[in-house]
Image (cartoon, rainbow, N blue to C red; front, side, top):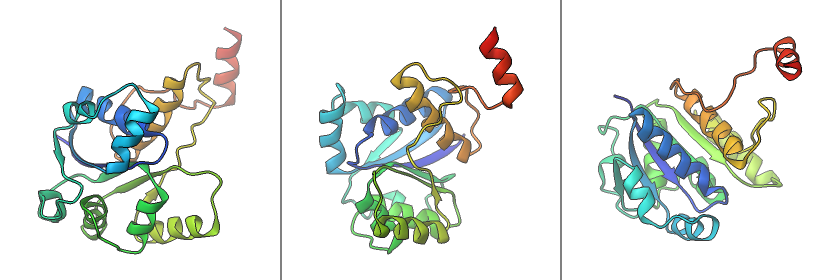
Length: 195
């Protein structure tokens, strides 16, 4: 069974993190989750969910300040980690190795152990500092996956847009899913439009 670390920050787009946990639970991926205090505030602002939704969807939730939790050590085996959504503050902490909480510590442990770290960054527009921090994180081994969905699969709902990003994160870990229709080339898409 696959096991992933999941960090959820207070960046706008909290539904990406919640949906990621839902899908992981549905397909049997274990999730070990760290939620920032700001993320709990964003859940209340952007969704109709309560704080308990994350705890019900996760295999285990660890405290944000619990830097002695299992996730703080490379000996706690995972198949990687996703930070979804990833705030610019968390990105900066990861890019510069500033381990002041369990979420950032877990992300840096993921990198030092040579495991896949996917950062679903959420900000617009980006300034030079944001871009340089993405570059630093990428050079350290992180996958930078902006929360910018594609439209070739003709999304009809917000859920379709969310699922496209969640599907791309799952793709980064080579986890099979059917969250969106994959690109099949121009001719295939033209044919399906005529049908």
